[in-house]
Image (cartoon, rainbow, N blue to C red; front, side):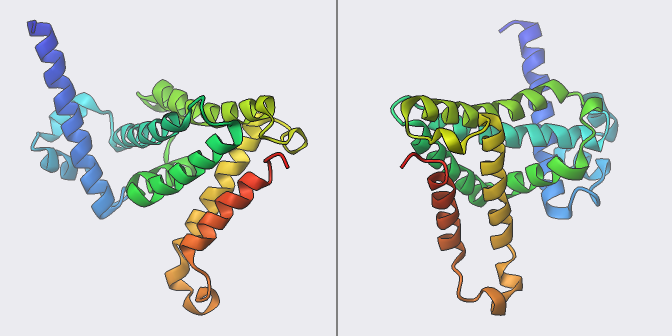
Amino acid sequence: MTLRARQQEEKQERRDSILDAAEQVFFAKGYDRATMDDIARGARLSRGLVYVYFRDKQDILASIVLRALESLRQRFRNMDRAELNGADRLEAMGHNYLAFSAEEPNYFDVLTRAASDWLQVDSLTDRDSLLHCSGEVMEIMARALSDGLADGSVEPGRVRDPLETALYLRGALHGVIMLTRNFAERPEELSHVSPHSLLEYTIRTLIESIRSR
């Protein structure tokens, strides 16, 4: 390995260690209460060195959001397979999105809040990567819809625009996932409803709403 390559590897390892520490701090204390000093201590680096790699706390958060998006993108890529028809691929993506929310809840929460009030995208170092990764997630869903229209598994009259329909499907499932997280706070109203059953019903109903009869 050349000296330059070794230096680049060390730089990436240090950057990753900062992000690893930031994740622990953000997820334990919350983003608003976390400080750059907390992150530096967690990474066992000086505060000044952290600023060499990231402009501020929001810049660090953006890189964590990118990690979350990359994890979700890989899950969707795994379902982007030619042997499944379009509707079946969408159903598989729905189950993968549900699994993502359960298996990586901190990443799911990061993406939820980042979509609303956290990030000023235009000012971020990872702006282009964030936009590309987020766009690919939706493109994979939209492509499954387009393929479903072509292979006959998706009803043409149910899809005005593949990307628009993909946004609707993801948003609807996301909303029900968020609803089931609050079941414990509403025991009397929802005592007869199983969160798992509701989520499975939601995925099935959403896909059946566009599947060809």
